[in-house]
Image 1 (cartoon, rainbow, N blue to C red):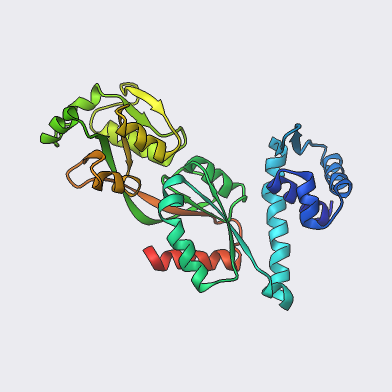
Image 2: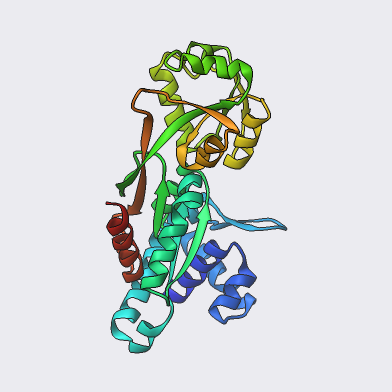
Length: 299
């Protein structure tokens, strides 16, 4: 195998398309296909699962990607160090982020970084926390932002923001009565609860908080599982149920009186938002700069 084959493999894996990879590498699609075919024969492994709509990595492909992407990254790093022209090129930082950091924190970080390094580019992907960590472990993202910590090998977590979690409920007479005795949350055993999707950091931390006040996952009356925070807030407003949500996401609704806020503990219930990266891979100069900006802003 050679670096050109591995470069073609990595590009197809990241773009999910042979034609897009060919265009990006200034090669023909048959050349890309030949590179992949040669790799598959040499390794005696099927690297991609193909269908009419997309191309995705097989299990063998995922394993190869971890090594191949590092080799391609090192090749680029060598070019960066020794090529003056390369140093002038625009770099792209790939960021995977869970919902709350992506929507409420990242925009300010990106604006600050862009002001300091105007030639840098970003690719931001929004997903749940467990997928963010998978992307970082698989070296498909340079840096991740996540609302929970999963014990995965090679991951380095840096807490940078304490995000308070609050319980919000419809602003109706029934819940206004509950609010008169805000320390009593026994009514939660019978009310419908709207949860984030499996894999969400908010959901994981919400389940911990509910368990700490005597409500186990099995006892919860979960009426809906919803991915989007805006949809969850609208569902609470319409009376579908209550939810535990980031204060960052709920603040405007609370201030406007659209929903009622209940503190889970006298001091509030919080969780750390984390930056995560793969300590087994060398961060690019751009990614290192980005980390420094985040630390300067929040740490």
